[in-house]
Image (tube, rainbow, N blue to C red; front, side, top):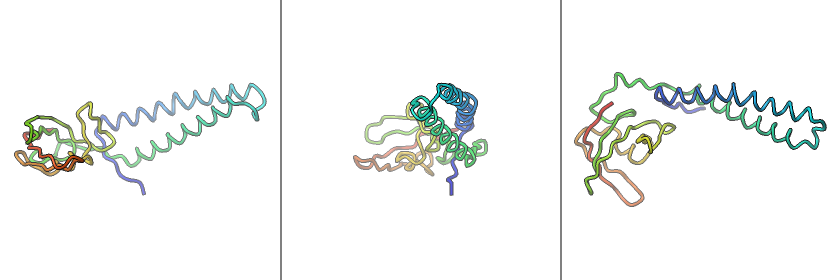
Length: 157
């Protein structure tokens, strides 16, 4: 049984665009490589043909996997979500209680996490620690170096 994955509109569009590119650009390109290699003669000792067939197999596997992911993808509608608690797609401003450092993160599904873009997974230690908390609450986050406490300063969408 496949796992349901939740995506933002942006994340779902990115997956669909990737699948479209694989089917309309990469697949025809590999088919052309196979045809060119086949035209060169003896297939039993044709390394170009073998490489192109292997690339085709890998691409088809990626396409199949992406189609499965998309068939189990669900779009998150955050228009009716409650801002009083931290949920997926909450933008959370937190402060490290120990050193006073403030950070702001958007909580997203595991597959959309990107620390550079300040998007953290709800399955990450910080994400798990923040889920369900309200503004003003202290979240205890288990890290390899011990428990770090974060104060929830603000929750928005």
